[in-house]
Image (cartoon, rainbow, N blue to C red; front, side):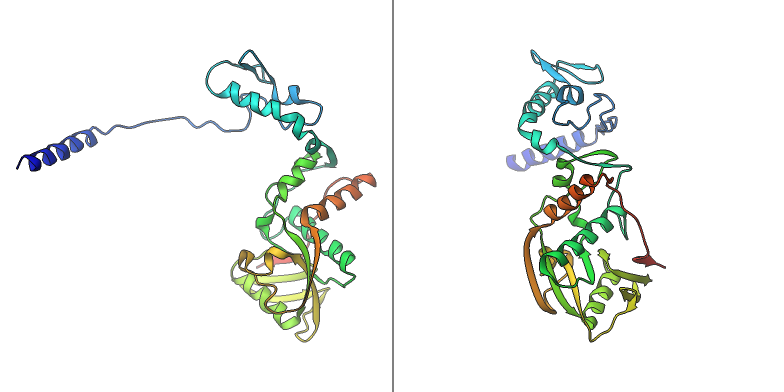
Length: 275
């Protein structure tokens, strides 16, 4: 009986507390560096980009001063780490405008998959007709202005290796039908028309796919067996592993552009049309 009363009393207390209707409110502050003026640091401008810390007080580039809370400690950690990160702060290219990766195609995704195609063909000596790259493997954007080595390393953080896959035309068509009905990925060398989540047409090199022809496909090993629900290896007639990382493939192309005095930019085209 006593135990029952205790339990009943506890429930009553919970009901009273719960009925008080305690509420909280807060304001949303965008993490856009508008208060601190912080921007990505290069190898030689840490203080200008991140500010500095003296005697536990953080002096931000914007002129704001922080002496309380965790801000000075966090700033100190970031600033002290910059010398070790200096190699990643090398400026490797210039981009006239920012480039991001977006469905169904974008300058950045087109640039990536076309690099995969040209590099895989060069490495294997095989004719590459088609390129396939998952959008999820491109993790960030290329900023407008100076492009750092860190930007590309952050963009392709995974150990994805270039592969060559030989595939019959009918299997290639089935692959694109699957992507059209579920999740289209970044592609190259093709002209794809999709309507109501169905593949309307598929051309490779400007010609309709020949079901009996063998096509060379350049991709990454992540997509061979289940990555992003693709299994390129299942119907492969041949697979060649290049041993070259996607990141290194992209960097090589960027270094070539910079050495030739060319900016880092790309284009949209008719490779994917959604009706």
